[in-house]
Image 1 (cartoon, rainbow, N blue to C red):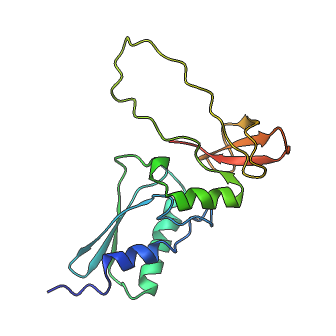
Image 2: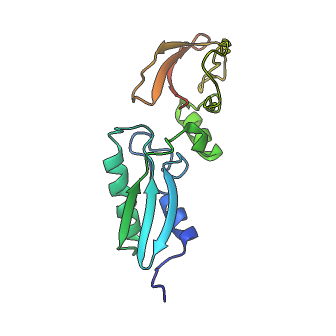
Length: 172
């Protein structure tokens, strides 16, 4: 007999209220960090994947996930850190991308492309220039200022029309 205090769907909803510590307008669920929620008898097992290896926010995220569940009466929580497959911006929800844009951070402009099927010796094709839309005015007339923005997962761009700098959430 299971003694789980909440449904898996309810746990997902609670975790959807846990904000990313570096970008507080997006939840860890909408960011795609939470990969699975399961019950092992009375233990809630939450699988999380960092946005990149060595992400300094993962300790805070883990504590926030546990704290949120403890606050809802789920006292036995086990976190599983899953590094493979690596996190990708493809796991972000549409709501999360919209929240980034509303916060002034340009969301990923493309999906990550799987190049695992390419073989050595295949002629390389030039990749099209990435078009990053300004989250402030909507212009596509932007340019990369720095590969590294306010956090390692973002790049710094500036809009050549409204002249405002902005972060771009890099695809990976």
